[in-house]
Length: 69
Image (cartoon, rainbow, N blue to C red):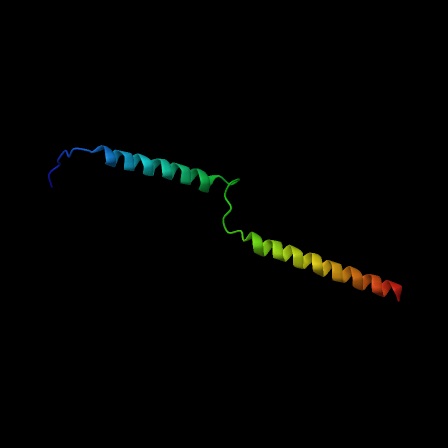
């Protein structure tokens, strides 16, 4: 095909620049290991911690009961 020089309007330039800056910000978030929190379900992890503490408490009370016998 023929190569044609089309006039570039300012809105297209702004759109391209906005997309480039958004992509740069996205890369900074994704590739920064200190800021990346992918795959963490904090509610589930906190629930697991509470369940483990409860289980340890039950075992400690059971050990005290056996110690009194």
